[in-house]
Image (cartoon, rainbow over all chains, first blue to last red):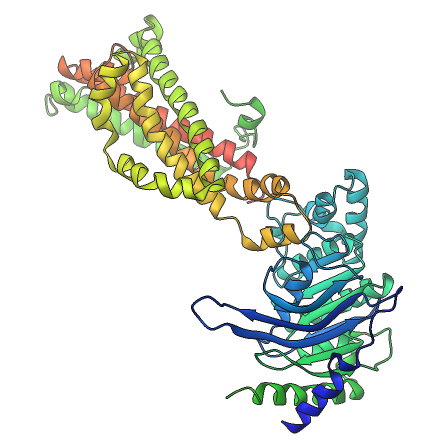
Length: 283
Length: 268
């Protein structure tokens, strides 16, 4: 409890640098408080004074027990969740709004459109953003090739495995070329092995095109393997209890890391923090 | 009626029948021949009274004179099929339009729902006498009954289809910045098509049912009217022939809808 409190002291926005006039943080959340409900029922405090800041090109994971508000923060950034909030949220210096072209959003479920081929799905985001057909299909083909689906451009989602569908969703996300990625447990529904494979695909794509990624997950190993920093949140009301830099060298192979000693040390440390965070709010 | 490309879709391998399906086909042929022969034999020997059951040779004669030497049955078939198609087209187009309206303005749907439920609960064929008074003995009253059946089926399928759109697809599209127009044409409508289509398939069958039912009650033309007349004059060969014809018609309608569905929804 005491440790958690001091870790929070150390980690929360109090020490977060303010955005500079130019080259400011890609994602900035300052003193964010979110309450749900209201009306007859007393409002539930979901997110409590959360501050975080992502530099451009940084890969940051947000971990925490379920219900800690990590998805709420992500949804706020997409602008899809019009909730009463206090504090300040900006993406590339601008307030969130739905359909912000600076953002690419990826969900846990692949949400491929079943009536479109892999190619049509990979190009879907660009189609919504009115990119001409030839250009968007060329881009989609290239991305599908890079996620290993070159031979499945014309396959419908029903013919693809879970892993392949999520590869296709990755292609759709990277196709967008948005500088900021918000990913909500994109590999949460996959089996362990497919997950490792796709994490490596993600690392390849990410290191080729440096994007700012805010990655929500409850899988600590995933967070450690992928991120530059891991931010740990407590159980509801969600507070940041630690902000741990991951110093593992890049480029990383997620599969090779599984046997890395440093990786396991970081994992154990984060696990301890997470346990404290959930425990202190259990009552 | 249906674009040729849709009907031609998977070319049926007429010549390249496997030996297994040849055997099945032969067995079916044998069964049908045996069944008809026994019926004919029983009718000749007076085991089955042809006054009540008809006889195959009589049925054949009736169909032959109706379709080949005379043209009477073509005319009646034409009336019924035309009535069914018009009911289907009018009923499903209005139903889809109302479905879109109701899903766009849910309060309107909530307001209209009790009345629609009441109307839909009514046995529609019971409305036929009323429609006969309003629209006359001709095809108009038949279409009215057909529409009254088709409309509700296609309406509920349209509403269910549009409501059933996956929320993930909507969230994703909105996050991508899709306009309401894009969401409707790229997500909502395509995802509703399979459900609407199964409504249309049922709707067509019910349009046929409504038209034939109304013809049975009172009409100047149509297979239903012919059937009622033959029954009242105790012409069992004709009745049997007409029943056979109606079954074939229903089968044909279903087959056409199946083909269209397969062509349109190959992704399923």
